[in-house]
Length: 441
Image (tube, rainbow, N blue to C red):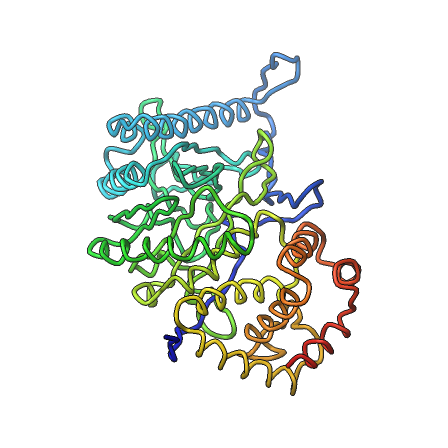
């Protein structure tokens, strides 16, 4: 028996990362280079100098800066080693014992990361960021920009970058953390990592991990079941799958970036890519997976259909970001509607299809355009993108559409390349595709 109702529908995809990024061409995909402040400390006039091992002259100020950097690096490596070994005392040995508030935060972060289960954790000081004085935190306190790399066991195929701002102070020859959320050094938005916010609950399924707030464990377990119901539909369509997927469904506002807007309104959920270093210096990155973050206001109504939409974005993200938005969102809509049809909502889907085909017949002039996706067709943009992709799949086959998506994703955001791909896979131009969709309506 087919259902007549349908789910609430607000979702979106964003590409964000804790550091500013610059896309550069790389063979076989997209690489990202982190942009930082390349400030180099200069020696004061008249400062004493010392020959280095290479014979170059090093000032006393430079020597002090090098000693400070080395001490901070020891603290960062010590914290990471303590997390890996599960030694709380060692982790807190690099926290300022005089800062009770920070000690409590560090205990909670340690407990959360151990609960989540990390295969790998490391902290790297960003070398291009000059440590900044924080006199309010101590006479010689310095803020540094830190790249935290985390790999969740059984979930992440590779380490994921998070950019942080730490402030440390030297006491007794050791550098100790006095602030792990320095806003200026971290250059972060409103959102925070789930393990930074406070106590958490963790629910697990095969290849799925859901992080929720205390008291929300029942909803976390429900979301695990919904995620497991969504995964097969995504894999069947995309022929791609992550090793696992993290879903963040917390009640607190800080689990969510309040600036995330899609279609003129807050999204219900977003797929956020995991950036993984591609070189030893951790200055270039590639997308290896994604996590799904659910808007706190909608966490208890999120279902397998919304998750399927976001899981498609997660599955396709490692291919690159060159695909046009009508294809990116239309493909995710297509998979979601297919799952709806197979879940006793076929009557509702048929109604949606008639509505968007009618809209397309009246108003479709060009393919929904990047940058003004919602401006062209307002709230109908997602639905129109869906019927375009559905038309291509029905006429040319799923595998052909997948190959088309993969070729565009790995390329540049270039209309000429898109025209070539349309001709290659479908023998169509933009205008001919629009005409075909309108005719099929």
